[in-house]
Amino acid sequence: MFSKFRKLINKTSKKIAEKVTTKEIKEEDIEDILWEMQFELIENNVSLEVAENIIQNIKSKLVGKIIDKKEKIENIIKEALIEEIKNTVIEKDFDEMIKNIKEKPKIIVFFGFNGTGKTTTIAKLAHYLLKKGKSVVLAAGDTFRAAAIEQLQEHASKLGVKLIKQQYGSDSAAVIYDAVNYAKSKGIEFVLADTAGRAPTDKNLLEELSKIVRVIKPHLRILVLESITGNDIVEQAKLFNEVGVDAVIITKYDVDDKKGAVLSVSYAIKKPIIFLGTGQNYEDLKKFSLESYIQEILK
Image (cartoon, rainbow, N blue to C red; front, side, top):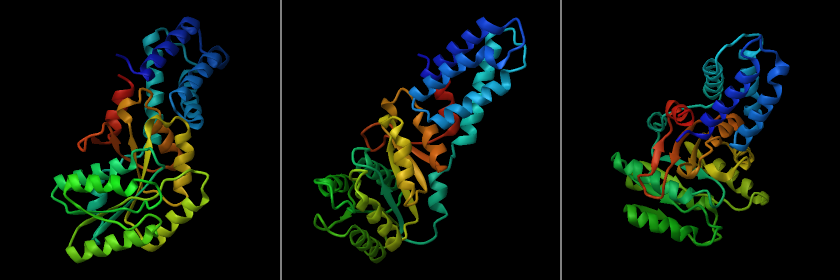
């Protein structure tokens, strides 16, 4: 089955070929067709800015040319899309990122709104590190959302790792600070800390996260975003980047048939995508690969 991107490329190429294969292509010949393509890119969760860049790149490769076959037009459109993806999406290897952190424990703090799969993602990354022989302690830094501590405790019990927690309403930075001290005393290599993710209208959220960053000085700040959020994902990314983001994990990628979120987030905050969440099991955390992403959306 063709991806939505591939179907869109085929449709656009066919329309252009039907209109201009016997003459030099002028901008006005393809303006309406590419406008329609831009609109459909946005429907596939590609942000307006990225969609505009793709269309401009296609125009620059087509206008002034005489192209006699649909297949050649299709290849040009593909080339323009691939160029934009490679110019936009930053790829970094998580293992290299943590290898470069010399201090112990290595502190990783997770940001993201409630419902994005942040807690499960923390558990998945803990599982990933444990499989590599690393030691891990979890910190229940979300002391706001009902059941947040219990959910993280359930994961900690399944994984066989310690969870540092306090009562609901406790200071999040203090909880994470306790976890760091516990890790130091036990020689544990990684602290994975949850944080609150309440409504975006709550100004206290960013103040709380800023305090955590200021007090804890985490080595990595990972933003967890949901692939199927739609174009709101850009505003979420920008909001959390006010506190500072080092890398992004995109969840529910397996149920997203549009795949434009990767492009939109990368363009919005210029941070690397390091993992994709592809299911509910602990093993369902796939390292992001730029080449694999390109192949997937063009298949």
